[in-house]
Image (cartoon, rainbow, N blue to C red; front, side, top):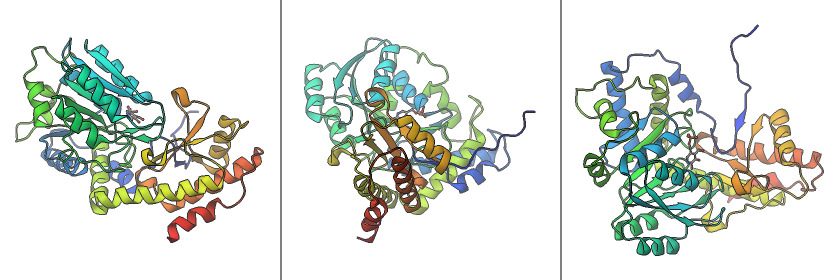
Length: 391
Ligand SMILES: Cc1ncc(COP(=O)(O)O)c(C=O)c1O
C-alpha cells in the first residue's frame, strides 16, 4: 500500500539542491497562513529587505518569484526584451545556452560570445561584440556556471555593458550567498538567483532584482510582456510597497517562511563571512582531491569555489562510482553536463553544506569507492585537507 514518503538521509554535494538547513525545514513546518494576511505581508517586506542585503542593493524591485531559477531567468528576458531587440549573450556552459533560448523565444536576436566550457567569460571577446553591435540593448552572462565550475568577473563585464549603453543581465543562481556579489557597486541591472544552492533553502523560489534603469525600461515597453505570470508590472501589485497588495497568485507561503529563515541565517553569519567560508572549504576539498590524484578542470583563477568539477580517472565507470557513493555513503555528487558529460564529476560545497564535516566525508567516501573500483589513489586525502584547516 502507498503510504507517507520518508526520504533517505543524504548529504547533498552535487550541483544543487544543497542540504537544507534544519532551521529552514523547521520554519517551513509552521502553520500556513493566507497570502494576504497582514502578518504574511510583513514577512514579505522582511524578505525583500533581507534579499536587498544578500544582493547588496537598494533596488526597490527586489523580491522572490514563486518558481525556480529558470523562471527568474525567463522573467529577465520576458520583461526587458521586445521583439527585434538585440542582446549579447555569453556562453561558457549549459546556462548561457538557455539564455539564448529565452532571448529567441522573446522574438529578439542573440549575438553569441562563446568561450570554452570550464573557462570564465573572456571580457575582451565581450568588448569586441559590444563594439561590433552598438545597437545591442543588453549583455547577459552567467556569473557562476554550475555546469562547469567556472566563475566570471561580473564587475568587469557589467562595467563593459555600461560603457556601451547596455543593460546587464546576470545569472547568480549559484553565486548568491556563496561568492562575492555586489549588485549596486558593480552596476548590475537585472539579476536572478535560486533558493536551493548557497542559500540552503528548498528548491522552487527565485530571488530577483532590477535596477531603476531596468525598471524604467519595463515601464516604458511598447508591447505587453508575453508572459502573464512573469509580468513584473502585475507581480508588483502583490509584491509592491504600501498597504494595497492585491491578489496576483497565491504565493508559496511555507517556502517563503523557509527563504526568510535562510536569509536570516545568512545575515546572522554575515555575507562576507559566508563568502570566506566557501573559499576555505573549497581549498580544503581541492587539496584532498589533488591528493587523490584528481584535477579540478577549471584554471585556479577562474574557479567557482562552491562547485568543483573534477576529472574522472581513466577507465572508471563514473555512474557506478556515483551509485556506490549514494548507496554506501548516502552522498550525492553530480555528473557532468553537456560537453563535460562523462568527463567530470561536479562536487558542490554550497551554503550550509560548505563545512569541514562534508569535506572530510566526501574525501573519505571517494577514497573508499575509488579504491574499490580499482583506482590507485593513495591514502593522504584527509591529511591534505586537514593541513589546509591547520594553516
Ligand atoms: C547557473 C544556473 N542557472 C539557472 C539554473 C536553473 O535553476 P532551477 O533549476 O532552479 O530552475 C541553474 C540550476 O542549476 C543554474 O545552476
